[in-house]
Length: 439
Image (cartoon, rainbow, N blue to C red; front, side, top):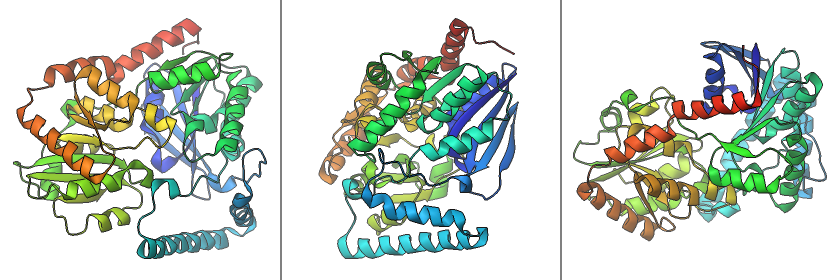
């Protein structure tokens, strides 16, 4: 029997949660097929082993869609440009995209030089509408004779709901976030997304999300739909997978220095500028900061220029991540409360730290993450809203690391309740209650 997991991720950047769900079913005898997208002009197929396969449909097949209920007039130039790219010959379209990317990078550098770094609220809002994914994911999955469908986040839900109704097969909706409540959307766009989610939920047999607080919000928003359950973003690796010398050896950080890490996207909305500016003030305090991630790192390197104790490093493969994170003394989650989704989220990096036994420092405005850290006693929350606050909070954490008793008992309890095997037990129980057939 086959299970098809639909997600709008690029094949090169598949969310580990999607892969973990696929492996859950594959280890129980299912043939798991992940239907995602690729930036390449042709479809891509991959075999991840263990009964998990990937079918990536070309995102070049996306057609720009103008939706009066979602878009604004200022989105019109982007819509016209997207439409033009779809009718150009492939070679010309590639050249146009490259030139457009270079122009955007040059424009951003000029703006930074002239006006300094933009605030998070000044960063561009999303123009793309999730509706285009519906057609490409539907076409990519329609030929799969699946006995079970999983929609991985809201952009994949309409296509999965359409397939579920068409083929009369069960549908699981895994909401990776409080999607409509992201700062990138204005009120009009948010209402359009809520309408889309409400309509598709009528076809859902089991609804899952990533935190108890988001589950409660979604269940209240859609009382006519299924009650949302929670599967935490626990990694499949464990503390045994970490080798506590990799990061220090690579960066040249001595064993006697405290090493803090932020790992994830280098997004301007994640309060990284305050983290870097505050960490600058700890030069000479036996402290180093590692920023390990993906995206535009130039602005962070410029901000940390001249500070030898701050290291900006590109992302490493998931297989190497435990060795890097496990080599650190503190995992920092500095996000500001830019939207309701962020306030209620439980980021992957929090569960990486739990699995590897690395104490966590969370911005106190992150309600769900702060609550979980306090509940299990695996770190601290504090004020990270300004460079001065970051400096004071980091100094307090470093002092606690030197004087606080070992947290191993707390981490052992957290791992027992938040590990991926524990999440699999819950998922098995819910599937049994729904009487979803096994292979």
